[in-house]
Amino acid sequence: MTDWIAVDWGTSQLRVWGMTGTGTVTFRKTSEAGMNGLPQDGFEPALIDLVGDDMPMAETPVIVCGMAGSRQAWAEADYAAVPCVAPGLDRATAVQTQDKRLSVHILPGVKQASPADVMRGEETQISGFLTLNPKFAGIICLPGTHTKWVHISAGEIVSFRTFMTGELFALLSDRSVLRHTVSGDGWDWDAFTDAVSTAMSNTSDLAARLFSIRAEGILNDLDAKTARARLSGLLIGSELAAARPYWLGQHVALIGDDALCKAYADALGAQGLPVERTDADRMTLEGLKAAYAGLKATTS
Image (cartoon, rainbow, N blue to C red):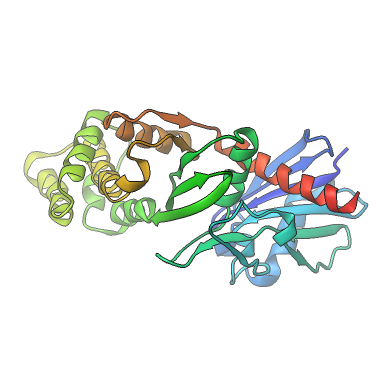
């Protein structure tokens, strides 16, 4: 029997889990109804369309993390300011719905005044990780479109920095002159590792090295898999150089897509830094379960 619904609403994807009160998953569903493709009044219908016949008839708590709480989305959920624990139901925004079966709560994001930074959704993964690792102190890195480096101490998010590395890779791969050189499949790990090392040793000529990928494609028939790996390595290496104050000498845990986390783990491993890899879906769900536990505590 489904007692509540856990929702991770991303920019391009919607993920839903039906949950029992004891934390067992009763169903899981995914759709492409991400925040970017929905008008403000489209969120409730998108959720109901996805849940469908699995929606309980009685009023059901729905706990949402991610981009549904952004200013342009379903309902704006305010940010908690660092230093702070990963915010839970006590800071959530309740949403008025047309369907009376839904009792929707959107979890807030986290903000930092200086340097200015924000996160939405990652704080729930951090909450899940800390629920499973309550004594953790160090750095949590969340690779993705906008990679986060997060300093954790005494169970709190102390500070964080965001790097648009993933978005830059997508833009350069799909919309720049490099698209002609990097299109295709496959991967060259040696080329990736070399490019990381090159970028970390000298970040000042990044723009020139990026164009060299195109030039090698023209002059030397550079293989697409090597070109893609080199592009990724240059961007991630530049990020690691800038993020060095976060990871140097620290205990680092990675939360994110498996392939991307492997790239970061290999890049950090080449610097002599062992890392801990986790299951991103599990961290998200554990964070939502922690929020539900907070809801049960307030209603019991």
